[in-house]
Length: 125
Image (cartoon, rainbow, N blue to C red; front, side, top):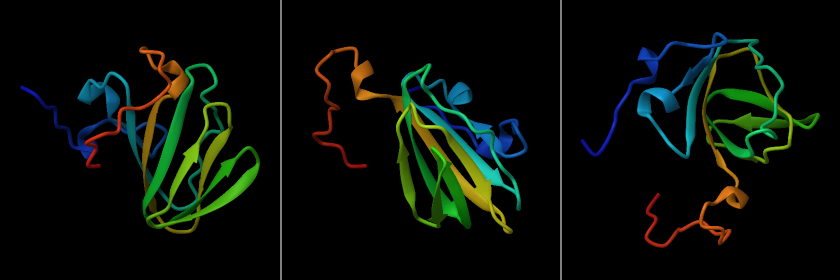
């Protein structure tokens, strides 16, 4: 089989919001998490200095604030936010449910080929 499929609702929820999809999808170079955040929910502040992963947070439903290095970034549906590995980040949800797709991957510096560039030609995404 050349693909793997999983429904995030069938993946055990962690920290009352996060559905980590990388293990069930058996990804090798990308992390994917769906976060369904209840009203008033806050994630734990953290960074990815140890593993060098940059992240993109895409808010697909609702409104929330992401704190990046003590700087509050207001997010609304459709917003995407890039966060470098060394920055501390925390989701703070407001009064209504919100939903994020969180994507993480090694920084370009971690590229095994050492050329420091992502292959983007022909990329339709």
